[in-house]
Length: 181
Image (cartoon, rainbow, N blue to C red):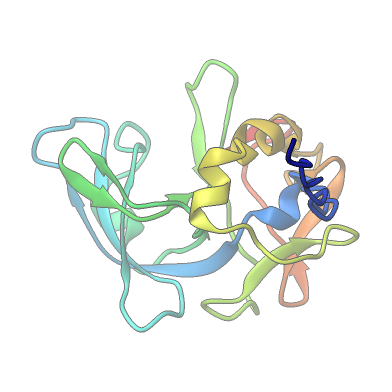
């Protein structure tokens, strides 16, 4: 009889904690915005997030904004998402917005005025390396983070009550106690 070799146990995997630090949220500026030809809820945008080339991102806020209101606007962009086609338009990221429960009001999350384009937005106590685009999808990070991602009674964007910050200030939205996504 051959002796079976015992397989070495793999080293214990570092526990993966899905929290706000896994999201790569960057300050961006909308350079261009136009109405999607086929989707009446979507704007198509080119957004500078401090990379070599601007990102193309689709945002479902046409019921709440005009294209000309978007150009030049500073926004917070969730940058570590895989490119997905939204009604044929390649969207590489997500512009963060706060919304009322019934969706009747949707407002952009505004980064602090002094935060530089491309700067990462973070919450104190949740610092760490952002997840890869693949990890965000496979580990369902958005499903785990978004329930605790909301504005407080002052309209400050928080994760588990901790303000989302960049530059010297806090990221804000014009709605109180609203969900952010």
